[in-house]
Image (tube, rainbow, N blue to C red; front, side):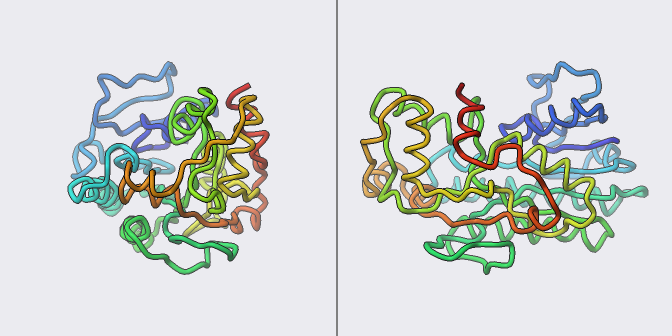
Amino acid sequence: MKIVIAGGGGFIGRGIVEKFARESHAVVVLTRSHPRLSFARENVRTVLWDARTVGTWASEVDGADAVMNFAGEPLDAKRWTQKQKEIIVRSRVESTEAIVEALRRATNKPSVFINASAVGYYGSVEQEEVTEEYRRGEGFLADVVHRWEETALRAVAEGVRTVLLRMGVVLARDGGALTKMALPFRLFVGGPIGLGRQWFPWIHRDDVASIAHFAMKNSALAGPVNAVAPESVTMRQFCETLGKVLRRPSWAPVPGFVLKLALGEMSEMILTGQRVVPANLLRVGYSFIFPTLDDALRDIFL
C-alpha cells in the first residue's frame, strides 16, 4: 500500500514510519525539512511541504491508500505565551486544513484519513471513566483539540473514512515526556508531580504505530479513538513504577505551585488528567502490545 504521513519525522511519526516501512508499504513522508531527514529504507521517500498550503506534494495524496497526519508544534516546546499558544493551534489546524483540501482535490481518494488528536479533549476529569462518548472538557487543550478534530472531520464529507487518534502521553526512550520525567529519577530525586492523585493516561509508541496500522485496515473504526493503554494509573502509581524499573526511589514530590511557577499554564498538562478507557479499540478486538505500564517501561529502559 502507499501511505502518506505528514509529520513523519517527529517523535511520534518516526515510530509510525518505521512500522509501515517494515511492513513493506511504500511510505511518503511530508516534511518541512527533508534535507535533514533520512530513513534507511528504500521504500520511504520524503517530500517537502509547508504544512499550511496545498502544493505539489498534493499529487502524493491522489491515489494513496491512506493518509495520516501527525504534524504539529510540540506542546512542551516553549512556555505557553499567547504567541506560543497561537503557534500550537495554527500548526495543527493549518496542516490539517491543507491535507483535507488535498483530499478534496484528489481524483482517486484514499480510503482512510488518520489524524492525530489528544485526550486533552476531555479536560480535567477526576473520577469518571472516560470513553470516546465523554463530553468535551474546558481549557486551552480542550479547545485546541476541538478545533483540530473539527477540521479533520471535514474529510468525511469527501467520502474518506476519518479516524481521530486521541492519544495519551506517548512513551519511548528517545524523546517525549518520558525522557524529561526519567531524568530526576536517574539523579535520585524523582517523585510524583503535584498531589499524585491525577490520572496519567499513557501509551507505548509501538502501540501508537500498531493502532494506526490496525485502524487503517479496520473499517469498523471511524471518528474518535482513545489511543491509550487499558491499564489506568495515577501520577503516583506511574512514578512508583518508573522508579522501580530504573531502580531508583520515588520520594521527592514536585509541589503543584512550583510547577505552575516554572511552566505557567502549561502545567495543566501534568497537574490534571483523565481515567481514559480505549473503549472503541477494545470493542473491535485490538490487542495491545504493552497493556501494562511495567511491561512498557521495561521494554523502553531494560
